[in-house]
Length: 46
Image (cartoon, rainbow, N blue to C red; front, side):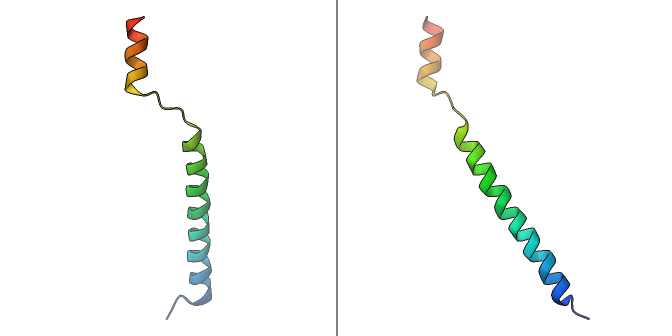
């Protein structure tokens, strides 16, 4: 017995959800400001 249409729909929905989560994660990651090592050294010197 094969999974048929229901199995395909479930896998397709999981793939779509994964795509949307990765897209959202990339948008959130681009908002993060990462301090560079040179900036940290300058602040310690002050």
